[in-house]
Amino acid sequence: MQAIIYDMGKKWLTPQQSSADALFEENYIGLRQKENRIYSDEELTGLPFVSPNNLHYKEWQIRQQSSNRLVNYLAKKNVPLKILEVGCGNGWLSHRLSAISSTFITGIDINAFELHQAARVFAGVPGLQFIYGSIDSPELVNRYFDIIVFAASIQYFRSLTGTLSHCMSMLKPGGEIHILDSHLYKPDELGPASERTEQYYKELGFPEMAGQYFHHCINELKPFAHKIMYKPFSLSPLGQLAGFFKWNNNPFQWVSIKKENS
Image (cartoon, rainbow, N blue to C red; front, side):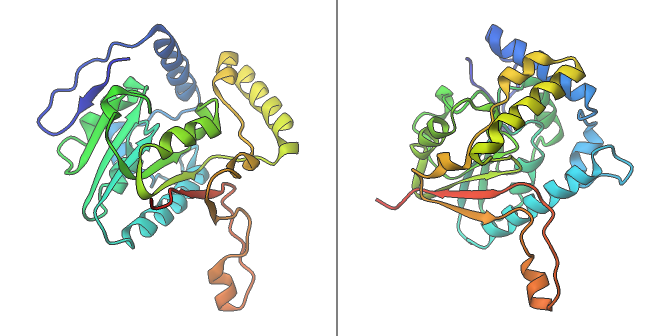
């Protein structure tokens, strides 16, 4: 796999994809088009805010909530941060993260179609870089990050423990991995979830995508120093403070995994 960098002052080149990556991208983009998840440049600049008439309005409300929580959490650190977003897609979240003071954001993905759009739409944004590749890309060798983010992307990695272990080696001491907008299942939920996924892709005409979507168990986090930063359907802190019951409606856990200082 050839790592192609887009950065300010550098030319974006068409990556030389492996046949497997090219096939995955073809199916993935075809699926997203079928789902109406390919956005215009104008729409992309506004994400995660979309019109109430958007087919995925409720989903983007959830992603707005989760990205706000992450941005606020990282901003409160009040220190320079090098952040890697794995599976950045069209770059909307990387763009949001770049607004945090004293950050340098690298978005990486094997989806060249959406990376081209990210490069075009967010050209000239300070502290924002996109790379074509995966977490084992040569371009990332000997680069270390304070924060690594998987937002709606961890499900495309076959091994959760293997992926996290590799990412831990890319973190600076005290660094953190954040997983959001992805389901982490209880053991008895894995079978039914896999069946639903297979049926969903079959109905849309992309049955082969079921083999690229992996269901991970929350128990796989046990070897890591992790913390549940947000628990789905829990009582909202604001509701508790105000003296009434208000439940969070985001169905995804937000998990933070920390690399201990050595």
